[in-house]
Image 1 (spheres, helix red, strand yellow):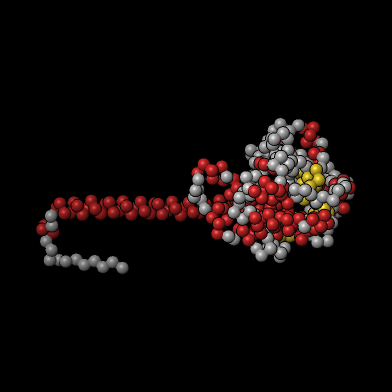
Image 2 (tube, rainbow, N blue to C red):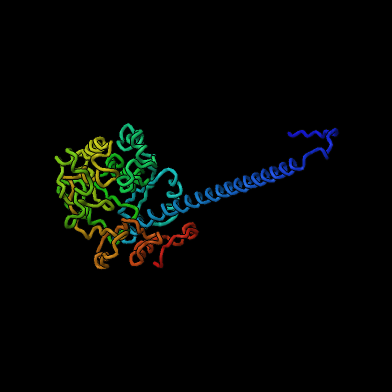
Length: 371
């Protein structure tokens, strides 16, 4: 509330004109400053609205893309299967996407294939008292490493910024180390990433003699590349004593696991041991491949390379003969087939399995190509 009083005893002529001019100038400056504050406040409000709309759009697009990726894996596997009714797909997502994904797989016919969709939260053993990664994510040091934007050593830390990628923090990426607990009645299981495409029947994997090994995987080393030395710290005495730096690395994305051998070899316990030893990140940085290489160091059986061809997300020199002969092609790398930066010669390998009749996918501006 503002009160104004007019003193009639004051003679207007007695007021100094210079004082009036000063008062007028001061008043104009205050009005100008007030208008500027109003403009800035409006711009801030408008920007907040735009940011919120952008967040909503990003969430909607990400939700549709999450469903599209998983559906492509199932679609391609079913369409290239000799007998889809023999296949049971266990799709795992997060609680936020669970309902929508269950509906998506329910309304479409998959030629007799059985599809189970669950959320990671449904697996009650996935808690910090059992899962080392969750326990470490709760630690102050790990939270500071992952979420503190200040770089202690600009040169060194900038080179390692990729390890702060949120994907390394998603517990969904670490579920692969708990398959026997997730599926206690199963003996063998095929693990597939959501950026792969199946191109031929995969039942032949169940006929492979695993020789008592746990993990069937395609090796990726050639020359001096993709050796253990590139994935872990061999200056650490524990690593140096246990592993050969020239050992050949293998790939995640399509892995055939003998769960009986896994239980016999106590592979999850082995993973927990090494994960606990790496709490300060001195053995390896982050990610799932280094602990996988360590956990299955002596229990991996190399598969024929035609089972799993990698690099479609970064290597344009892969021959089409190699791709056409592959059971599974993997778009590992940054040039994912649903992005504008995807390599055109590979994009349709993925897009031809997208359900383009899905009205929600049609509303998204995904670059699915012409396939």
